[in-house]
Length: 300
Image (tube, rainbow, N blue to C red; front, side, top):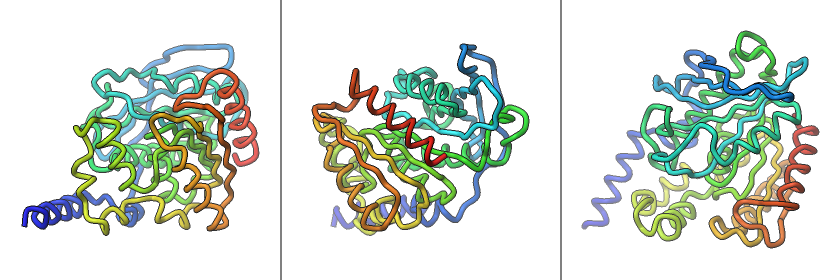
């Protein structure tokens, strides 16, 4: 009886939270406006701004890199992986990737997600769906404001995603909900199968302190929120990268995603990095960035 009761509670929570891929696909995004709070830094290649935007009425923050030169430039959203929200800072470990992509000639937006200071709202949430909603609202605002004001240099018709780890899982959800996303780079990405993610979070990442609600969710609910079951809906080209010695996210997850995308006839390229860990360094990282440059040049 206890398990039946828990299943009912989980099902009710899912229904109230509107987490499914179908529900996310049917709703509207992009209310309000993206605005610049302040100029953070000027370099010879780009200017970095602190920006904010509303996501379902809650103010979110992040930074934007705008290349020097005459646009309009394609836009890439860089989606960071899990960082403890209590210690999160605007310039986090993925800043170097955002800067590298800006130097390639792209307007780059690096969102914080809900609950990551100074963004409002609460962190985490069931299956990290709120983070995807934050990104979907930001993408909609880029399209709405492209070519004017703070986004005068942005081309809203050419938008791509770059996601590492948890950010890769967010990118997969956004790409199946928003068919206008043109290109997706994934590095050491979490799975599009939320059952696998729940097991990894509960047993590996958090020493059984996070992810239990997701782990106990009925399979039908898991299927409805898992992007891997909706890959046929995306029109994006994918570039998937993973270190074979990743100590946090199984390399096999990217292999599975590559196989599924290929089976669907999607545009996908897949790269493994022998001995590479969850964060690439040195020659492996340089090789990765070279491939990212080539991929975005072809697709955006």
